Length: 243
Image (cartoon, rainbow, N blue to C red; front, side, top):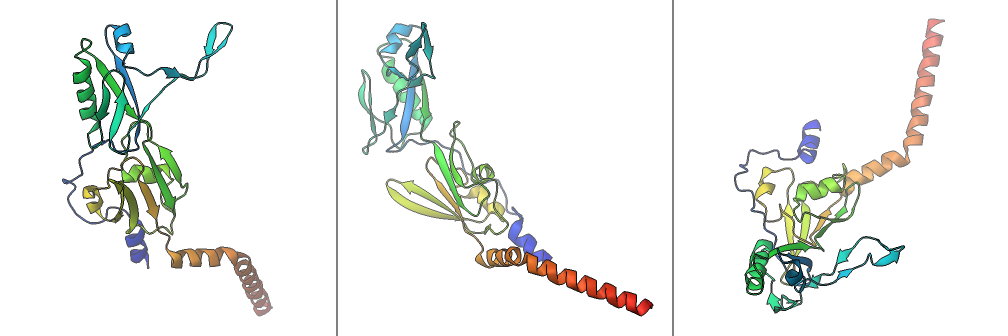
């Protein structure tokens, strides 16, 4: 029983090589919401490529209140954003670094040495099922592995099925499902080892183990009473035998 329990609970058990870890890539997709900030040595010239700042404009005795937030761009269904001065630019299916390079090249026709800062505002993952803290988690640095996401959710419960974790991902508007075995080192080569924005992770519960756990918890008082009676009976027998 001990060996079987270990096989079900311990991660990375086999000797599979980890040389094939998936390459991390951040690719923009339709419905992504991105913030883009253009800076340059000539601040006034760069400003024409930036959307106006939103929020934090309440004035109290001459001081601004609240945190300033820069407006963002929603990538439309065709994969375009409508950028100031430049007009519509296709950004979907491009890596984040490729979009930055593309914008800097186009803006260079208007100002010298522009620098583009781009951040995906809707980069979040959702973890559900047999974990300690299920929920949706925003990822500011836009980089997270499946293991890190499970860590944010407090790791799997003891009843969570570790060899059949489901990752749901939308690709070009189509939902795709991936199954991952956390007890195998082969998970490092899985296409979902690095999660993408809006991925959903579901940990299936082991219903048999959960039923046993529920049965034990619900009958713990009964078990305690039986043990108490048995101990009292054995004590009485011991005292009588000594007499």
